[in-house]
Length: 252
Ligand SMILES: Nc1ncnc2c1ncn2[C@@H]1O[C@H](COP(=O)(O)OP(=O)(O)OP(=O)(O)O)[C@@H](O)[C@H]1O
Ligand SMILES: [Mg+2]
Image 1 (cartoon, rainbow, N blue to C red):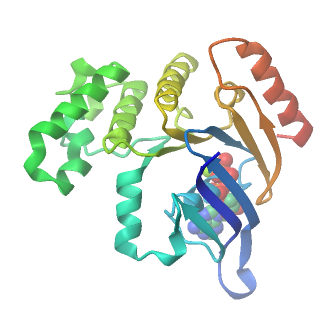
Image 2 (image 1 turned 90 degrees about the horizontal axis):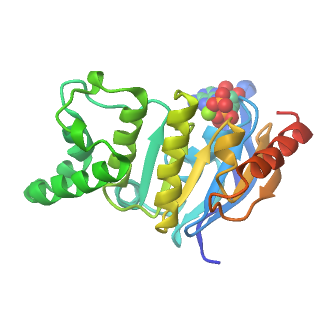
């Protein structure tokens, strides 16, 4: 299986001198093309730090990250930002959107910066995505006039605008109620079924149970992994149980 990301012996430390601490302590991790993976672990175990390292959002102190065949430590800042912008999508717990722009304009803003001439095409693509996630009727709304789940859908549209090879989500369902979280997971499943790799950090067994591989972290290391068949709508309870057994085993 071709790997979209390979992280090899990644070391990430914060602080200086005596205060210096290794947050990631020689972590190796990979993501296959089109794979759906989750990262779980206690608060402070290094999940977000790993995601930032694998996505090139943050540099590493040692080891290397290869994305789509390119060693990220060897590419310049401009190319790195192109790779992130064109091949990766990011979704966070709270989407950062601009208050004085409506939902549609927030979704297209990053793409417009690149290519102002194609405004009509860009808006058309945004509308296709908004339809897909069920927020078509909200395009003119201010971001303060929609629910958390709707805002998260808009954030997903924005992340999908450039048809990325992978979507990274750091607790994308973390501030949603259980119904909205499941709806958002349906969207991630659909995106993944269309061939986009998805990597989600989550505390929620129900979210992780939708994926096909879960990496469990503790104290800056990946200590265990659980593989599941690709989710096809069946046996959700059995999958959740498997995740929970593993969580208990590692003491999350
Ligand atoms: N910029 C930073 N400077 C100093 N320490 C940091 C920085 N970012 C993260 N850390 C530390 O690194 C450790 C791992 O943080 P990280 O955010 O990766 O954890 P996490 O597993 O994502 O936790 P959570 O589930 O709470 O989001 C924590 O001890 C945190 O305090
Ligand atoms: Mg985190």
